[in-house]
Image (cartoon, rainbow, N blue to C red; front, side, top):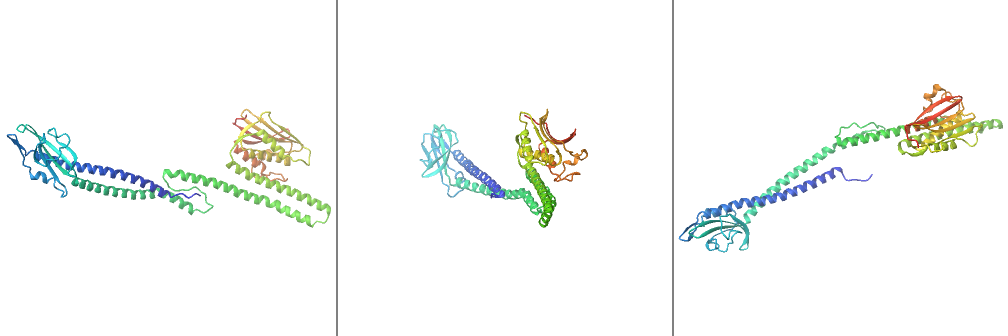
Length: 456
């Protein structure tokens, strides 16, 4: 199993990255907001000071007089590091009082009521300046009042607001991260419950899990239950195979061992020959039983694991007939095969179908056919039919319902395992068909019918 990182840490890392990105966006927004808020607050103070100074101006006989109130400048001197500059001049730049080199903000040179505001550099310091104008007829024009303030105070206010916003964002991010960790732990708890439920189970308990879980994990539980159901089926089949094999093989092995011991102890040649024949018969019976048990296991396995493809049923029946009929028989049997000229094609597993046909043909040879064995493949209006017939005594009609059960041998005392028809039935049912029996005019037939399929 490939090692993967913890689901918890993957989720925590992903959500932490999202929170970190969100915190960075909030910090950037908070910094911009703090700068805007600081500028807005100090601009209002700056506007108030300019207007207050402008309102003290007077003009008489063409001379402008100014009395700069101290209170107007005190409001701008909250910060000890801030520097305040002011200037009163006519629109023609004739200085009345203040710093005669203090520049006008953009648009104020031509006069106007304002207010005008802008940023500039004065005497090596970046400052924020604002100007308003008053029109005096005695002065023949506009008198502009300009006040400037260095940026230390507003920068300090912006930093203070930014820091407080950062602290708030940090605290909220920490709380969100802590809540996220708790939420992930709670969300992943059903997985831990599933793990605990599986670890507590004994190896032989494969019943469905009964664990409460949210809808997102219900599909996982359903998949686990489905897997355990299939595993239980496979284990049951394996246990059945082991039990059947032990039960069925033990008897012929015991009999074979006894015959070998008798053969080893017998001195009379005639009786040694008789025991030798019995050993051969027991060996053949054991070989057939072993082959059928393996065939049964193979058919069960392929029914669950192998896919289906297009197969020619007529060709499979022909191959099964050739494989099942031995080269030498102890009686003369006429073997006939009849199939349409065109292939009888259907979807299926070639190996399983061939094994089913072979088992029934071998049953017919061993238990039925006296002088005739016939295999016929027919296309019907709705599908395909395969008939395996012989002129033997067949199976009594009252035993037909039980004839396809595993290890059912009826009243037969001959050799056999009772698996041939059971294997055939399982294969045919896995292919959506059915198995039937028929008897007429001394001929017993086993019919395989595949209806509702497209035979081509």
